Length: 316
Image 1 (cartoon, helix red, strand yellow):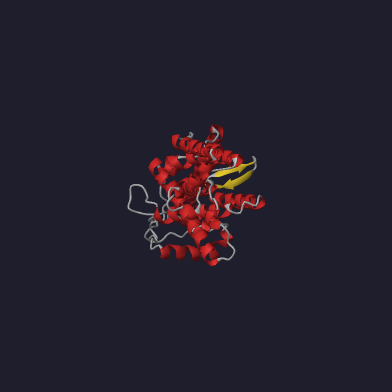
Image 2 (cartoon, rainbow, N blue to C red):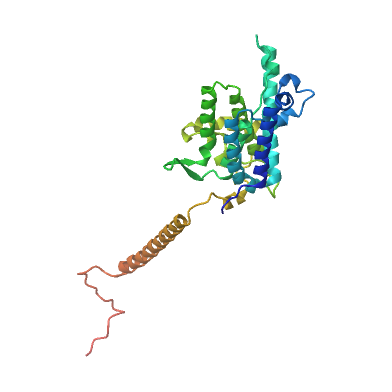
C-alpha cells in the first residue's frame, strides 16, 4: 500500500514553520513559547509549545521533512486521535522532566548561574519519540541506506540517538541531548506500558521486539533484560505470557512502497519453495510405503518352503 503524506503531518509541519517565523520576526515571543523554568508559572502552556519551537533554520528543514515521512508510517496505524495523544504525552513528559531536572540542579548544584532562566526548546525530543513509534509498528521492515547498507527498523532509534547526540556534541549544543534521550525513553515507556490497545482492554506492548533490550544488539540482552523486568514490576503492568502479540495488528497492512517486479519475484520464489517442500513430503511418504512392501519380499536366493497347509495335494 502506497502511504501518502497525511493531513495531520502537514498541520504539524505548518505549525513548526509558523512558530519559527514568529520567533524570527518577534524575538520577544520566545519568552512566552520556549520552556523557561523560572517562568513556567504562570506560563504553564510552554510545557506544550516549547516542543514545537525550533530556532535554527537548517534544523527546521530537517525536522519538517522527518515529520512528514515518519507520520505517514505511524498515524495510519494508530489513528489520528491516538497519534495526537502520543505526541502530547511525549512532548509534555519531556518538558516536565527537563523542568524538574533544572530545579534539582539549581537546588543541589553550585554556581548554577541563571539556569532557571535558560530557554529550552526544540522538536528533536518529539522526533526521537516518533522514531520509537516507527520501530513499534514495523520492527522487521528493512530499508537501504545509501543504496547498499541494510537497516532493520528495530535498530532505528539506536542509530538516530547515536547520530543526533554525536552531532549535538560536535556542535556543542549539549542541551539537545537530554531532549533526545528523554524523547526516546518516554515514548518507549508510554508505548510499552500505558498505550491502550485498540478494541481490547490490554495496555501496552508486550511483544519481544519492543522490550527494553530490543533497542540494542542481541549481545547486550542478558544485561538489559533484568532492567526491563524491573520497569514492568514497578509499573505493575507485567503482561501474562500468553499476551505476547504486538498491538495494532493492522500495522502489517501498512508497508513502505516496494517495486512490483521485486514483489512478483518474491511471490514466485515462495510458490516454488512451497512446491518443493510438498514434493519432498510426497516423496518421503512414497519411500516409506516402498520400504514397507520391500520388508515383506524375501531376499534374493532364499528358498521358500511351503507349509503343509499351503502345499497342493500330490497326485497318486
